[in-house]
Amino acid sequence: MATQRLTIDNIRPEVRDAQYAVRGELASKADEFRERLEKGDKSLPFDKVIFANIGNPQQLDQKPITFFRQVLSLLEYPALLEQEDALKAAFGYKQDVIDRARTLLKGVQTVGAYSHSQGVPAIRESVAKFIEQRDGFATDPKNLFLTGGASSGVNTLLNVICANKSSGVLVPIPQYPLYTATLALLNAHCVPYYLEEGKAWGTDVKAIRDSVSAAKRDGIDVRAIVVINPGNPTGASLSPDDIKDVLDLAVEENLVVIADEVYQTNVFIGEFTSFKKRLGQLQQKFPGKYDNVELASLHSVSKGMVGECGHRGGYFELVNFDPEVQAQIYKFISIMLCPSVIGQCLVELMVNPPKEGEPSYELYTKEYNGIKDGLQQRATALYEAFQKMEGVECQEPQGAMYLFPTITLPPKALLAAESAGKKPDEFYCLALLDATGICVVPGSGFGQKEGTLHFRTTFLAPGTEWVNRITKFHEEFFQKYK
Image 1 (tube, rainbow, N blue to C red):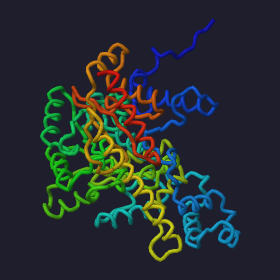
Image 2 (image 1 turned 180 degrees about the horizontal axis):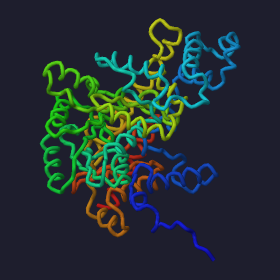
Image 3 (image 1 turned 120 degrees about the vertical axis):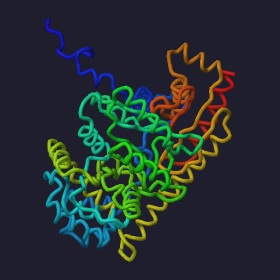
Image 4 (image 1 turned 45 degrees about the horizontal axis):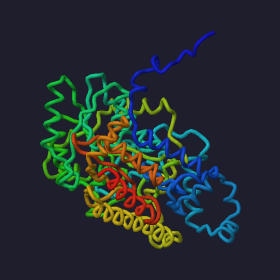
């Protein structure tokens, strides 16, 4: 009898060995609990699973922006535009919703057809205007690539940058595991640089230089540096001086800068400064010095107050890339034909929302600010809870959708984890899930300094009752293992 051709031992080893913690064992177990609850299982000590392991806002009851969904509904079924009066009278559609749908349909014709591989030209023009207004520097739509979420853009860029198995990319630790997983698939090197927890998870340029030097000694060709700003999983927000330090390093070491800026509207302390803006300022102040810095910056509809993860929309902009290299990037994305056209339209709505004086502006502003204020309130509630918990330290939330507290576990808990064959932070997170139904991610899934333990939690779930579940569990856990 013939055996199956593929086994775990003969598939591509890079795929088998890649790790992606935010959808790992804990997430699978949380899904099992959810299914049991849906089937009426009353044996669990909780009645709802909280998926705080991933930045998936609408799964945790964040409501879609009305203007965005109304426009999308008309794009999906343009025949509705023949009934304008009914749309307004029966469903509350405003004139600017109808006008925007007509404008977008002129650009895409239909969301059911392939678009230009780089993205619909009219939508790229909207994105270019958004970046110019945000940063004060010109943006050429030809340098913009619309993507199926930021993750698709990261995959494209790393595939082009990593030429062979000696290629290396500097990645912040702790980091979002998309980067280490993609580099593992490419059989390239992740060159870690550690963020400074005691300095609000800021960048330490000396540490980055040390990482570059160590990598070079090992024969690694360090080609790029990834910066996540605001940070995931840390929530840190970089200052203009921090950004300048990274750009200076890029000049010194001839590095491509990949700026992951998908949380740019999720800023609670200070203001967001893009790498594009800071680079433009430095180019003006120091003519010639920064002219060859290659910058790729990414944004997405998945985060912020939009939270449309499932629609898979995003973009990246290339600055100072060689035209021949840019042509190869275009070829690479063309292999996949084009990103989701409805996702592209949602990008246009994100960068060009209703303006003051337009019919949908008041509701849009109310919904947007309501989501933003709710996120900050829950971040503060969670932070204050962590401040009171034994053995837990946490940096004040600055942005993004996450907190990344340090936990110091009792020796008995460390021994219990060892006996169970689990890492200590993983052991804690599994116990939390079993007791409360709250799914978080152990810090080991993102990388952490040796001898430290963390976990990452989102603060997307509505209300604060689930925060009380965490504090109650933590107190009982410590009593058990003291």
